[in-house]
Amino acid sequence: MTTSRPPESPLGRGPESRRPRSPLGRVSGHFIGAYGLLLLTALLFLTFSLARPDTFPTLDNVSSILSNQSISAILALGATIPIATGRFDLSIGYGLGLAHVMVLHLIVSDDWPWPAACLVVIIGAGTIGVLNGLLVEFARIDSFIATLGTGTVMYGVTGWITAGARIVPGPEGLPDAFTDLYDSKFLNLPAPAFYVLALAIVLWLLLERLPLGRYLYVIGSNPRAADLVGIPTRRYGVYAFLGSGLVVGFAGVLLAAQQQLGNPSVGMDYLLPAFVGALLGSTTIKPGRANAAGTLVAVAVLAIGLAGIGQLGAEFWVTPLFDGGTLLLAVGLAGYAARRRLRAGATTARQEPPQETAAPPTGKGPPQSP
Image (cartoon, rainbow, N blue to C red; front, side, top):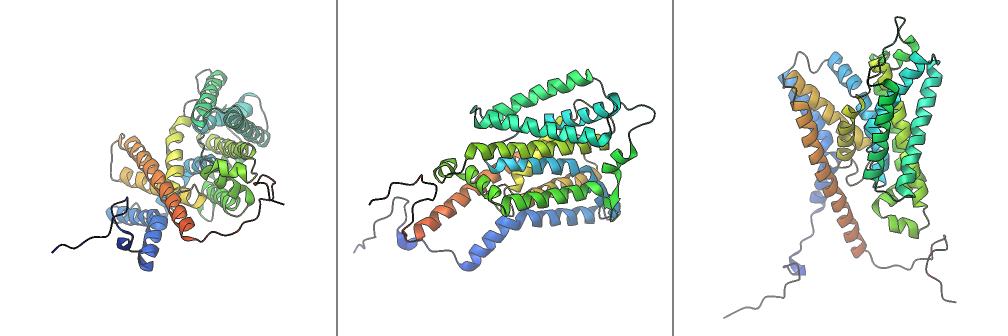
């Protein structure tokens, strides 16, 4: 005696076999996806603290980590802004090198007051960001190619200014107020850590609480839909690169205060960690989209990991191996988180009953029948 089976769906399973996930499973899955990297940060800190109890969980070590990783964190936050729109700014490393060299050149060689030199450099970096945005949005050059091209030009300008040599201050040194931008402390913690925190708060407000941030996210997820609802995608794309450029300029000022000499090749050392932080950050807190809080968590994972393996006596080649492997992992996880977010949105849309909607207020909707 044979029994008949219901016909299978094209996916190989009948609708009755698709059991919905329990509420507990959905909550736990969301928690792990959103806060798993934060838990990994705590686990790494605990692991290295147990391995090196005398040196790792100390205030001096924490201060050193916060100070050493502050510029990478600032650059990662700057890279987060174009990534929110689906673009990439590969010029940030070259821009960092040019900005810190220009600050020292204006102070040391041209005797500019340091506040004026810092302001001009930040404005100049923002201008370069606008140029990147124009090339990407209006000239329609791919963001990888456009920003790599402008970055290479900036690297050439850096070499022209320095003639391939370092800019070394005279016997009198740099103004104390300028070097204190990096060397000073607040609440017994390095001041650069508070710069990172302040920038992260500003970026969080911009992306999560202001219409500008929502527009950037819409452009990044669906540019065609953004056009249909009347968002000027090109203009906001330029705004994203402008924000990235301003952040790079500020990071260059801070790097000059830290290094206290102009090294024409130092900027590229920060490019990879910045992108690792920004891309890995898009897999946590709000998985599937770039966000400031996630970037901070990702930078913390990298900082603790590098500090820990350094104290364990790792060889010099472990750092680039760690950065490169983490970048590959970050790109893979970011793509997976974005696809998962799209699938979740599509599932929700299918489950919701169709509703009558009014025509968009922009006048770009379909014509209404009389």
